[in-house]
Image 1 (cartoon, rainbow, N blue to C red):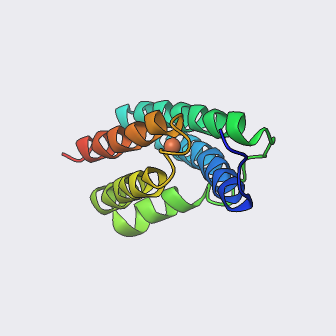
Image 2 (image 1 turned 90 degrees about the horizontal axis):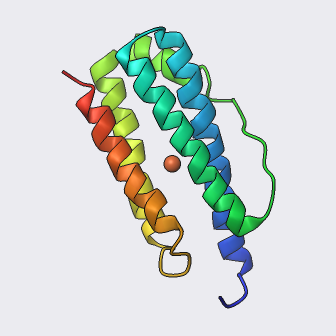
Image 3 (image 1 turned 90 degrees about the vertical axis):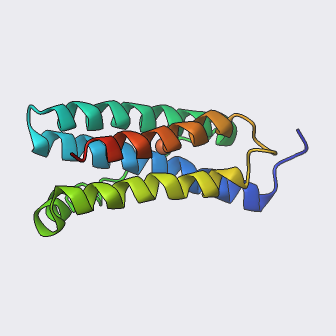
Length: 130
Ligand SMILES: [Fe+2]
């Protein structure tokens, strides 16, 4: 691979941080949901976001710390918006990541599996809406 540009490194680091934060965010949300099917699903998604962060870590070779600034966000939005609207919003976020990662898969083919996972995540979350 040709040496990475500063812009590419920035993109990868931002993605790595975003995946780490998403991991914590889903974990915190799962804890709030208690012992439910939805909680189990979000716990699984959290683990996969952690795996995504590891994919980016391999590319950046930089250790980042997850930030839990959004840990309270989903429980709060759950109260305000209700489950259906919140889950649609979360799914939209997952689908938005597809277009984001699409920009770099030619340069970093490793990201393709991450991109495919985000699509599946969006579908999974939509599937939780009865
Ligand atoms: Fe992800």
